[in-house]
Amino acid sequence: MPVHRERRVLPYTPRQLFDLVADIEAYPQFLPWCIGARIRKREGAQIVADLVIGFRLFRERFTSKVTLQPDDPGGPRIDTVYADGPFKRLENHWIFHSHPEGCDVEFFVDFEFKSLLLQATVEILFHEAVRRMVAAFEGRAAKLYGAVPRARPA
Image (cartoon, rainbow, N blue to C red; front, side, top):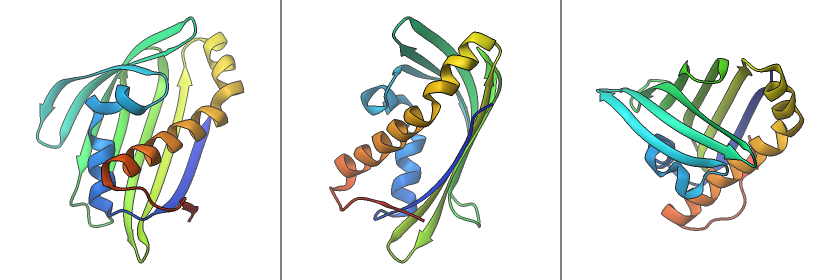
């Protein structure tokens, strides 16, 4: 049951990074292994979204419920919970705190697959996969908002 927590300070505004992460339909353009994204339903701050993840012979679609909170008192945040697909459990959040150097990004993901074989495979690759995903979001921010020096851990 991989869990990953990470904080980084990035030289962008909390709103810029919130908007980047909230743009789910753009994920296939930059996010490794994301080969499809579709918004099924949008009601106010609530989104139901499908993502298709593919890696070698592995290809899975899953549905998540996403809550966008751009005006949360603790900083803009995005919370995601599992709705349907290959997981037993999936929980993810992004929180964007103001920081003198831009934005302190707090990222958390916790998941468990239904398939023990798939779970074992992912656990082997998990930390590398998360590192590449975080780097992809940083690269997307640089493309959208301008290149900047490397981020540093918070």
